[in-house]
Amino acid sequence: MDFVWITVALFPFYKCVECSGTAKEWTYTGAVGQPEWAEFFPECGGSNQSPVNVDTLQTLYDPTLIPVQPLGYNQHGKRPFILYNNGHTVQMALPHWMGVAGLPWHYSAVQLHLHWGSKVGVATGSEHTINGQSTAAELHIVHYNTEIYANMSEAKTQENGLAVLAILIEAGKDVNEGYGSILNYLGHIRYAGQNVAIPAFDIESLLPDNLSQYFRYNGSLTTPPCHQSVLWTIFNERVKISHSQLTKLQTVLYSSKVDGAEPIALQDNYRTTQPLNYRTVLSSFIPVSVKIYTAGEITAIVIGSLCGCIGLAVIICFIVKTIRLTSSWDVLPSIQPAPQSRSQNMAQEHKEDTALKMTTNPTKPEEAAPQPET
Ligand SMILES: *[C@@H]1O[C@H](CO)[C@@H](O)[C@H](O)[C@H]1NC(C)=O
Ligand SMILES: *[C@@H]1O[C@H](CO)[C@@H](O)[C@H](O)[C@H]1NC(C)=O
Ligand SMILES: *[C@@H]1O[C@H](CO)[C@@H](O)[C@H](O)[C@H]1NC(C)=O
Image (tube, rainbow, N blue to C red; front, side, top):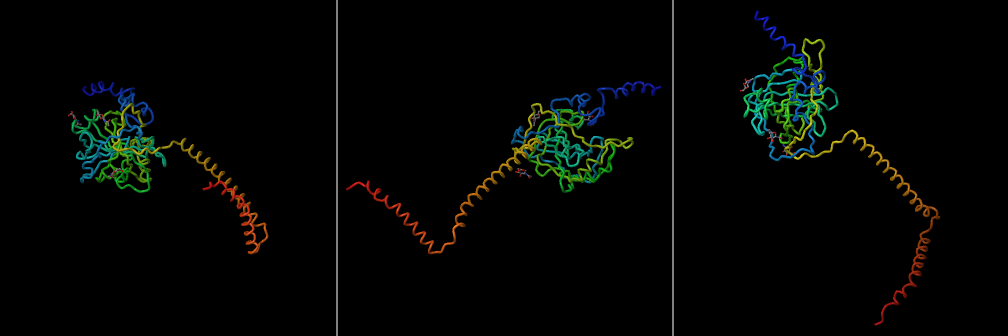
């Protein structure tokens, strides 16, 4: 009797899970892809969304932004960390004693996770971009404000509730041991819903060396429900993982469950950059405004330099030809006359001397003439 009542009572709820406006499932592409997020999760359509593009020429230098100080990141203890494939990313819970200082409040660590792309040799996968440039991947270390809020679930929906450290990741030659502590275990959590206990390791090994240069702005979670509660710190220095480590991250995981008919690769789990909408991005340093060229500008520069080089080559050819021509005129008289003896040469020189005297002598009296008499 009771069972029937419950079934009847819950039926409309179950039915409505499928209906428009109440979906709890979301993806990066497809039916509840990024363009649809705002329809199902209204905060995703807000005006303070993340990620953003950081235009370094538009950032405001704030000398009060002190270096970020990780707290207890290297005191990992002996208890293993739990790595979890939640279908959207690989996530790792962090012990509550880890935290971060150097921010307006004290924040305690909750979890870290990654975002990445799918293409080999193309630097797309990061969520934040700097001067329009993506990197291959991005690590987020999520913290909540323990000074104002009781726990993560309370903090994540509130103003100043969360602080996320963002680390931009590039592919390079060398294997990164720190990142290896995570990436080496992805094979154990290929399917969504799987988790694995891994040896605890120093979380500081995931950070760049320089924690004093960063960008800071107010934004949101980059996944639904996109709560606008995040104080972002994006480090200027990037970290490098090896190409094979990146490939592992891009190819090992599935966004589908183990019982799914066909596994779906977990790739391109990054949100496109959102409008800044008059927010200010602060910088803790004066960014060197390295001009980043677009493909069009690069083409223009290449063609321009090519034309310049051709022009220069033409000019050089012309000059060389002119020099050859004039020097051949100089050389000609010395070749043509028959070899002369040394006495003949001397006689010649003597003749020239007398000729010179003859032409200069007559002018002398004229020059002397105007001298006034005393
Ligand atoms: C978080 O804190 C709020 C307020 O103190 C409390 O009501 C809630 O049960 C807590 N949630 C968890 C998951 O601990
Ligand atoms: C970070 O970079 C700044 C500027 O280049 C430098 O002054 C500072 O010493 C660096 N800090 C570390 C820890 O490397
Ligand atoms: C973020 O917002 C708070 C107000 O909630 C403000 O005090 C703070 O200056 C903002 N920080 C940045 C970096 O814009």
